[in-house]
Amino acid sequence: MLWELRVFDKVSEFLASAKSELSKVTWPSQRDTYASTLAVIVLVLVSAVFLWVVDTALSTSIRAVL
Image 1 (cartoon, helix red, strand yellow):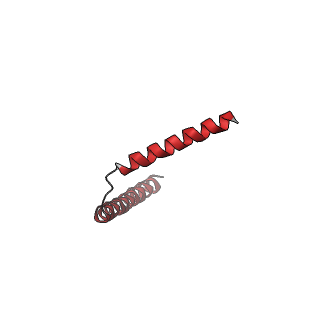
Image 2 (image 1 turned 90 degrees about the vertical axis):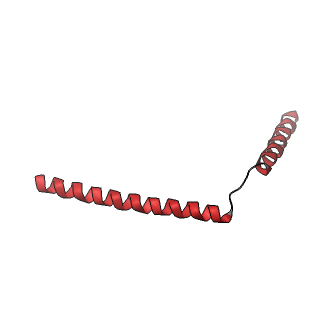
Image 3 (image 1 turned 120 degrees about the vertical axis):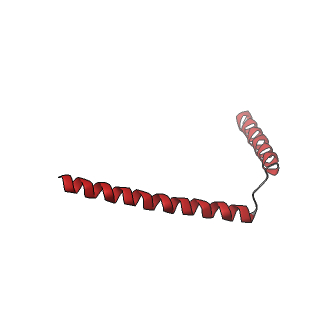
């Protein structure tokens, strides 16, 4: 029984601390979030195309040699 009470106290203390820390965070604006998301999507697409080109070139080269 005492163990359960101490665990509850620790969890409550942790949650209060987490709430306090989250209130200190400077969250990005919707515009910043949109711009960052767009940048990530573009970079992923560019990387995918680059890897596809390299893979195709290497596959073609290996087939030509074999």
